[in-house]
Length: 211
Image (cartoon, rainbow, N blue to C red; front, side, top):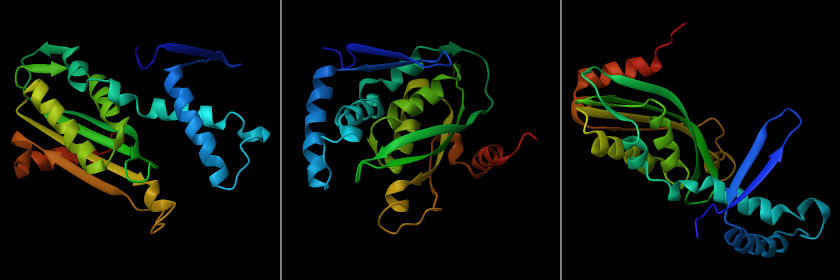
């Protein structure tokens, strides 16, 4: 059975159609666990505002972890093109939303990706999709950065890959040290981007404004 074997649609007043795909058996199983957790938190799961909360949380978790059912390499291969272009390709400010595997709290921010083609380029929309495929899992930012880098390097075989991720972590902001303005930056490089000159050009491009 496919994870997303049911389709639920809901239209809002402005014409937007919300589509959720989910596996009902898994939703029911996860929801039962959350219904049991609520009383342990001091809540009454039978009160009106919480009646559908276990199911809503279960659906949200299935959406937020849908990356487990995605193959990032296949995403890239679906839009690879032969092209005689050998300069840096940069896609910056890619929004990231993920879940910390230690506390299952969100972390979010931006990813900046560059690669230098070696005979093949990839459709630009595929790089953000690869980011989502890895981010929609239980993660740590360090591993997420390396996974994106390695997938692009192994699939496209470019001259080099650069990935920089900047995120805020709610596990730091809401609990623990409770530092709301802290930003964590991670980076990973291969090939030409391990050279100071090329890496410096990439860092200049992702911090530059077009205004």
